[in-house]
Image (cartoon, rainbow over all chains, first blue to last red; front, side, top):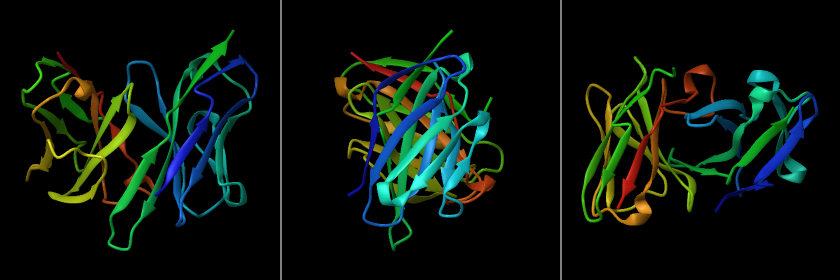
Length: 116
Length: 118
């Protein structure tokens, strides 16, 4: 079984400050990891994904995440927060089975508030 | 606008009833995915269809079923509805059947159908 833990259901940062959203996973097989963003009253949007190429992944809107196997982590960062970054962020893990099917598990989400 | 459309936007029904939610993928996309988002359960993957065939199944209840039609639109059927089924149901589409590849394996999400079971 696999799981995803997002530390902190709510995170507040000042505009211009570093954004750090934490994600830890557990998986018995090599995972693929994703970060999604959900703006208020909108659907999800893919921010970035780790697919076993580079461990540092750059995404849209200035976000990036680093896959650290030894720490089973995939934390999301952005050097300088903008007001428009206020949203809910979801980490997800996918593992593929030998039959070609897969399991997809989401974390519970972290709501990011940006203080002017 | 992601290009994925879902109807209806809102649905209010009673316990025990059956509803059908519809999803039209982006033009040319062969995969459709269904998700449920609720306060209790969070975000859950339900099911994935690729070119008419089931590709992967997540936490989909037996009371729920889905299919993808030859024109690639998909329907999610929810039956014997319970209060706990109240949620936002949204779908996504992608060009191919995988999720971990490049641009053609990126999902685009619809705005969702908000279901309220009374």
